[in-house]
Image (cartoon, rainbow, N blue to C red; front, side, top):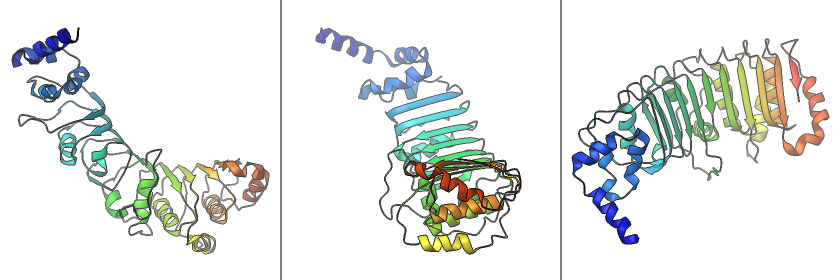
Length: 334
């Protein structure tokens, strides 16, 4: 039986090129691409199919891609691209993206070659990125409205691991951003770089801001958060997932939050605040106090307590309720 299988496989592999191309043309696109894993001799065959047309959606996962042939002209109709654990060289990835003129939705999950994001995608509207991150640049993304950049679930950073990111340069490439999720990896890159009080160009279209795994005991992380808040005058929803750890500048962060009057911060359009893994530490309480005092249209503040703080629920709620509220109708839900 083994000999017959091998013989059958050899006969298929040794068919004339035009017959193989004819077979591949009749397969669904996804199955055509998957033939690259059959053997080394099949690794490049799908790329040489002369009339292959990529539909509006392409999903690839758990594979390795190589450079396209010299006749490659791009994917003119591709609108949505989803890559998960796809390994390729960074220059191939960038060429791949720039060759999709209609690309609107891009999802990248744990792809080793995308640690340095440099996007040239003039029609891109949605980006979801999850995985390791060294640098990010939005070189040509004039209509990009939704950006999620988050670390992998099992990500454990090493001290000094994050490369500084220029906040001003990053957001210069996002002129119409509406929904922004800043994950721990991007937040720490911002914190490692130069942090302005506010961005030169206001994020006037931003409606939803999510800050994931932020430590309010770190003055630099607090400064990043306040920079984005100052720069988003029309935001309506703020979601903060808190992170905890011993930081050398916790006292400085607390003093900064408690002593500043923040006259330059006004959350005039914020209607909903959500704070996850909340506790009664001084910097967290000071931040909650700031949000309540600067949000005149606030309707609800949702507080989800840190697991080991559930027994203090009434005490924490009682303290938060005492904070001055700019909105007389704001409801605090704990």
